[in-house]
Length: 242
Image (cartoon, rainbow, N blue to C red; front, side, top):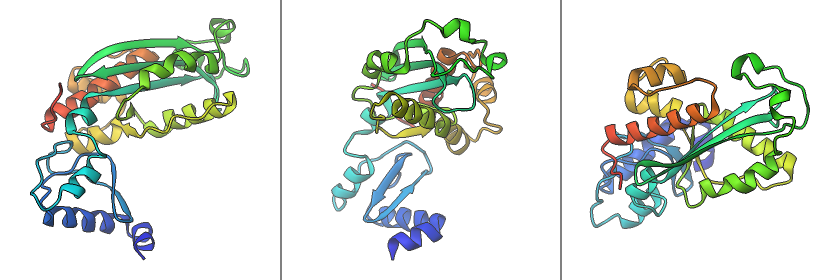
């Protein structure tokens, strides 16, 4: 019954869960996929990303909503990822960048060129990468063996228009015979809209509003900008970064 209700009326399901949490004493809920019983939802509270100490009657609810982590862990340790692709195939990544954030600061960042499965390039005019640039570059499997450490123990991966980067990561992993990482994604398009009230939410528009430097479609610049958007959301919403 709850599953049917959630699927048919997702917004009402969100409201019902939010009200149940409020009655149990949780004043604000962290942004992200959370669940209570059988009703998963995305809740954005009055101060998105902020969690307050629950009343004594609801410790289990607070733990479930926080995913077993404190707000410091949830917000301060994450990685931002960005892909550029050679063509419309999701497994055609030709560049990838990861920016790891620890204790609320950029701790490490790296960009890799990747040799895609074929030499078919349609998007060179967008990102400036051509087959000649990646002909001798490592494959995704080789790159990920090094890059995976950037995602060790992070609370989530952040990306701008996360559905794209998540699908590229999954497709490249599948093509390489690897298991795709299972950590959750957070989308900075949605965070910028819901938490900061920014419209439109293209990456250049958001960066312009927040004063974040950007060389659009440079994978490392895009990933670092994404990381800084998450940090801006956390700071604006009262998140604690240690």
